[in-house]
Image (cartoon, rainbow, N blue to C red; front, side, top):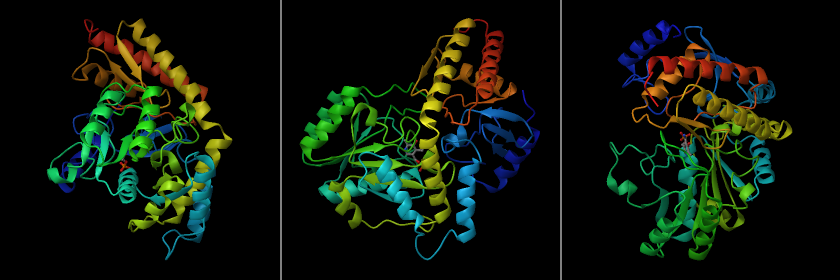
Length: 410
Ligand code: PMP
């Protein structure tokens, strides 16, 4: 395995001054074989603090979509930085960015900007409530929509009242939605959905197209908003809203991760029916109007289109999935490879404690490939054929090594 001496030292220094050493989904407290600290990155490559180089299949957990330090995005950010970032009011680049969203995203008649994905999903719910005067939001069981009290998967420190207006349904199960609607008729402000099933640590099937269409119909029937949480999938599955290819347009969408190739910004887009409600709520943040991320977002969305980034990520993702399946079969492992190919989830079928998955990640790191054992990975458009070869060779070697360590595992 790669030497992680400096990483271990940093982990223990952090223990003294950061509660728990690290927090949130980037924390790897028990995964000491995966570098917690990263020194630098470029294109599709990442270097940890011990100087080990990896071809990266996590992309900063999604934000990096054109590759780290993309020259065009960095130049746009640098040009804005020279003019200013946090100013007394927004830079004109805010309007340019809103215009790009409206031009690129089919359902979007307007856009608003914030910082985190949680800001955006929360704003969507607030706008839906402002418009409908109702309070309940249908949320798929196990889906992640952010870290605010209403959304967090960890109820520690959160009063039940903060989550009282969530009504659960089961993703891809329209009867569960109908039952929730029957039980709460006239109370439902919105149905919140992700473009595919976002269950951490579990398989992530694609949406059933009829399910998505039925959600749209139900929202129209009951006068509720269909909110698409495109924070994770946005601009990776489609150059526009993720359900456009299946003809389902939400009323409101939350965007974040890949919007600015790593610069901090999120967005809400909506249609004209929700414009007045969006204008009526109070939302803001100290850094929400910071102009550098907006300039980076304009450059990112433009370049994504110019380079057919979705097409490239799909090609790379298909080949990665095929290669992984071939390697798993070669060494006799039952695996599932789910989710869109650009956001793949690899799990061993008989691996309840993620023992095989962890071993595979560690062995992949030893061969210069950075993955995560239990969460979905992210592909960037910067992956070259040589990067893909390196990833597939590393993963094949990793499967072989796991087979050696676990001769009886299936
Ligand atoms: N929704 C989805 C689908 C997400 O994947 C995430 C982040 N992983 C969020 C919301 C929350 O975004 P953030 O962490 O930027 O607040």
